[in-house]
Image 1 (cartoon, rainbow, N blue to C red):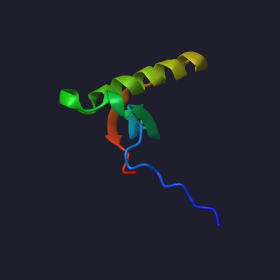
Image 2: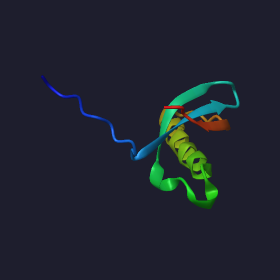
Image 3: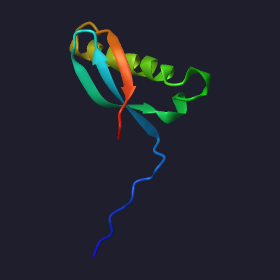
Image 4: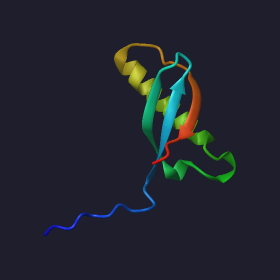
Length: 75
């Protein structure tokens, strides 16, 4: 019988849930853990997600929606 691979407790990414100012949501956005921690805490995650949103908005030809709140995903 095949064995299921166990997931590492420490992954390379942290997951965040995003609430935008227009009320829309995005779940489980990945941010490299190497950016997080230290004195800034999760603030670098906001910058990384804004960069991701800028790239997506540029490809779609739309303006980026401002972020209202970022929280870590419970998973």
